[in-house]
Image (cartoon, rainbow, N blue to C red; front, top):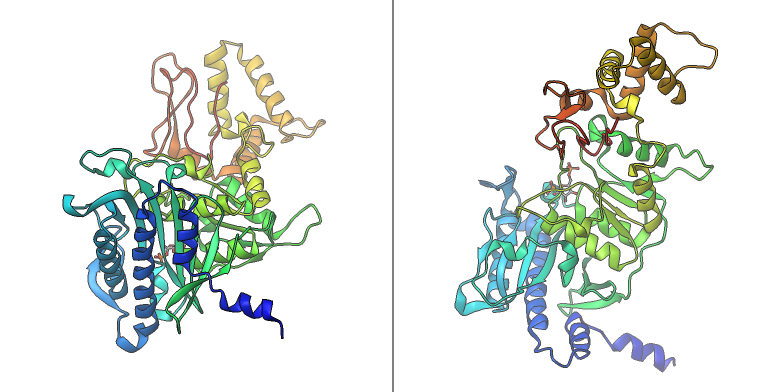
Length: 455
Ligand code: FDP
């Protein structure tokens, strides 16, 4: 008889035991985190049981309310939110709670306050409830940095200041994945014991994966780098096999698969939603925290996701997360030095405007301006060496190239010629624009999909 194997099977590492073990590494610790986590675990068990019974108990269906994002709230969402808010407040270890379902943050009354702030989505992926597809709870935990009255400012901090993050997936099994900043561990609920048991110790995401996960129905509105990346997944030019597409449309399920199998999950910005769909505090940050802890990466399209500093509690951000090397590829597409960044001439709305800019800006004779433009266009291989083209044909090719690169509509919407007298550059007028032009004289950045113009 293999006693050692037997012993292994009977020596069950429950989540509470696991966290207590972790706690014992910090002698100054008073067990506050363990208490907080047990209350989160209780909430997860309750929601798991409610989700399992939903079909029978008629918990599915509309509750007749819409949440603050204008989505229809389901009964299970309402229930899960109530359960978590009550579990967290009664732990006596929290001061500020932010839930996807509540417009305002909950500031815990003084007699029940503690040193943690919890941001959470009690039931993410709610559009999947009615058809029994996996859904989940996502949470992130911050510590209060002072003893004054709590405010929402206490959670408007970058994700890299989170002390723990996790999710619980209500799927074919109920799994809780947790990181306290020292790796990622997965626990599966044993329904007969009512305990989460460590089943996936020290999860590491594969360095590269062969799955990409995105709502491709939004493709017509994507920007250049996203379109290019997804094209690359489907039609790789380097001889590597095409990636498989998997998209549940439930973040917890899609991220869970990405964590275990590798690959990339993306919810990018698009023309309709310039900030993407997913919420920074209780979707992007916790999942990015877990990805990094498992050896992967999370990128917003501009920067490391965990370095974002949210200004509002329900702020959204585009997100690309997953295997280290897959995210590197996305970053390379976005880098300004990358050859895929549209060159200056392609960013300008059309040949005639380009011409007038050069003319006004340099006071060159018009013939020199035309020669300059021709040289720029030739460098971009729009014109063959022996070709002699009329300006109208050059203009047509410029427009086609612009469309290929970034979507002409975006460009037109975001950029207008600067109106200041004597100025020769472009202004941003998009609400999303991150514009820092100085009297239209230096740099104007209009969106992620247009690069600096410094002519
Ligand atoms: P849902 O709308 O069903 O609640 O942010 C919520 C979320 O689901 C995520 O769980 C999921 O990844 C995403 O939205 C799905 O959005 P799309 O339906 O636009 O693909």
